[in-house]
Amino acid sequence: MKKLRYFLETALLEAVAWILPRLPRGLLMALSRGIGTLAFYLDKRGRKTALENLRCAFGDRYDDAGRRRIAKGSYQTFARTFLDLFWSSKLTKDTWQPFFDIHIPQPHIEERVRQTGGVWVTPHFGNFELISMVWGYRGFPFTVVAQDFKNEALTMLFRRLREGSGHTIIPQENAMLKLIKTLKRQGHAGLLTDLNIEPGKAAAAIQCFGLWTCVPTLHVELAKRLGLSIITGVCRSLPDGRYDARLFEAIEPRPDDDTRELTQRVWNAFEAVIREHPEGWLWMYKHWRYTPHPKGAGKDTAYPFYSNPSPSFRDMVPEALRPPLRGA
Image (cartoon, rainbow, N blue to C red; front, side, top):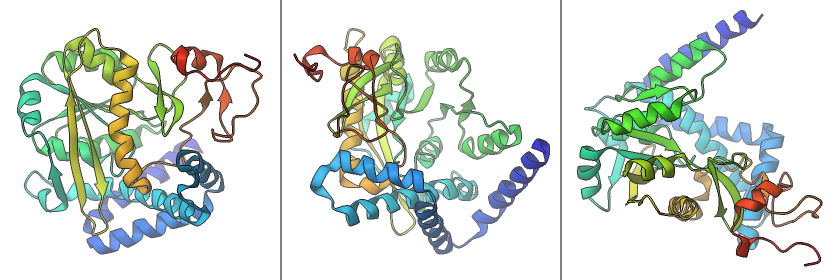
């Protein structure tokens, strides 16, 4: 049964990969809106998480109708990201430009990192798949870490789609060593940095929409260790079917810089654009799994319903900023 299921899902997605590049752009946009809307109504658990995340992040800025509008837009954005990954196989080094507006506030960024290599980072915002494709066609081939599927044929399909502009996709196993080797050869690493992870050595406690969350620090550690720039940017979906791809800044960390503060600085650039275009972020994801409260602490309603107190996470938050202990 497993082999049959793998065969059918691979055949389906291979068919999608053949059909989507041949559809009119307008039809593909309508399809992504329709799929996203359907997912919003069918995914009860994800919708509940998205609406709760929006309540905690924005408070009274949006009413219930506003939060539902943003959450539905988030589903539509994610559907478009998925479909456009398949559609993008039609693009080449000579044909991608009409679909993207490029904004680089510091033109010297590309010139410098082309010589030295760099660590390029983005959140799950807009089309986080195509931003790497754009800079691949601009002459910056990334090494990107991606989780393998249980179905090996799907792993190969998605690797083929993601490597179209010259990138190299590597599995999570031994990824750190492979990234270091790439960067030492003046290569480029592409990383997503906004997912919630367990408290530990490879993580930092940062404030995200005023709430503490635990995110990876691999991008900061690589840049500090090798003396490289951290280049931040996003690829925002535009209503007309095109994209706004922009870089924010190149952060130049020093070996003795505080890892948590650098991780916070990277996130602050992303939060600013998410506040302006909230429908672009992945709100159905559990971004605040841990709270900096001791065990036995009562529920803090500032955090989402799925959050739980974590003493180890509390230890990661600067002491002066920790919530006070009950009775203290």
